[in-house]
Amino acid sequence: MDRVKIMVFERPVVIFSKGSCIMSHTVKSLFNDLGVNPTVYELDEIARGHEIEQALSAIGCGSVPAVFIGGELVGGVNEIMSLQLKRGLKPMLIRVGALWV
Image 1 (cartoon, rainbow, N blue to C red):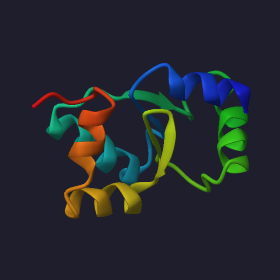
Image 2: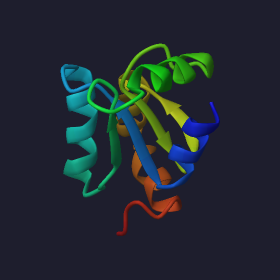
Image 3: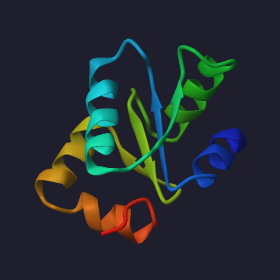
């Protein structure tokens, strides 16, 4: 749990993902299209990825992708896409310094 906290507070936007997950790819593509360079941790490719996945599950992330903005859990693909459609994602990214207008 502490390791995850450190990881998400290091950068404005952190995505926990799996390389084989199409939803993870969709979220990463959205951020890249917006001009945001998120820190991405591919849980199926990094050491202790399974432990990190368990820690994420303990804080309410049942699946990947798990997106943190400004150190706070925003959610998965549904929450991110909903924010984008409601025009709430960009202001959040600007607020944490991940996007400049």
